[in-house]
View (cartoon, rainbow, N blue to C red):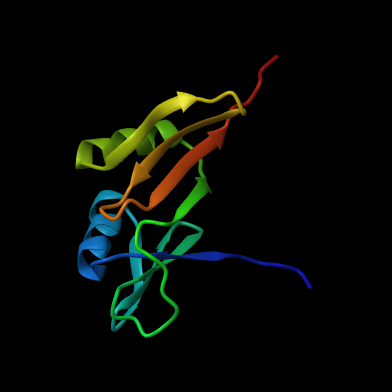
Length: 121
């Protein structure tokens, strides 16, 4: 068996509000919407949003916390900051070798966007 990809399911209290935030502010593209469940992508990253009326398994909104590896993290940070993203940790070089920042959605779900710091020495 070879694992090929992964998709995180993010539980939200209001699917339409979350879709608006993830697309308008964070730049994700809506892939599909089925009742109170939607799929989005940002380049090669896929996420699903699950609203309170989704008949599937439910978790409390605001409990997701995951990381997305990306290039040009500084430019992306500037773009979404200007659009009003809910930044909870500023863009910084971290001790663990990643330049990253943290952003929340309206429910408190946390996305970390980061890029490995390349050591030129």
